Length: 237
Image (cartoon, rainbow, N blue to C red):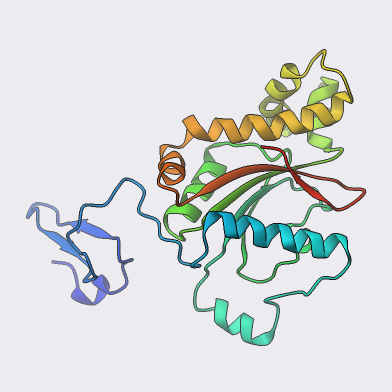
């Protein structure tokens, strides 16, 4: 038999089927026995997906104008988020040292759920992070953020042999490079943009959980490109 003390530690959506007995134990909460959809995430931050995007972009504009307010970085904020996190946006950004989400969007502790990988592409680990943020934290906005002159994209564009596990990055980005061959304009930037759009589209089939969240109006997914020269984030997907 499970210790009743442990039940209080479960999330309000959590349920446990007791082995053998088939007994359903659930936390006491309003609407306890209501049937829930596959996606049950709640907007804990009490902000809509569209409002979250506007908040993010206002922060980027403050960064561009050098009028940053450095929000949520006080001693009281440290104490507040030590008790729990309620980010309003998930950002899949490149690992590039020049693309730090909290800085370029002028946000603070607990505001953004960061996932960073060179080339800002999807794999199972990244998807798991995104699903956790949407399902368990109720984050209403997901941004896949590429950037100007991305080194990982350039490696895929060059097509030269690379050492070690760097090849996994190149392999993941290569479909975006192939899709832009022969297009007018700058080949490097074309590939950067295509890589963002490819991964935004990939979410639709790669994660039923995220697709359900979008369908339910609980999550907005967008793709962006960060300009290294101006500091501006442009929504491109």
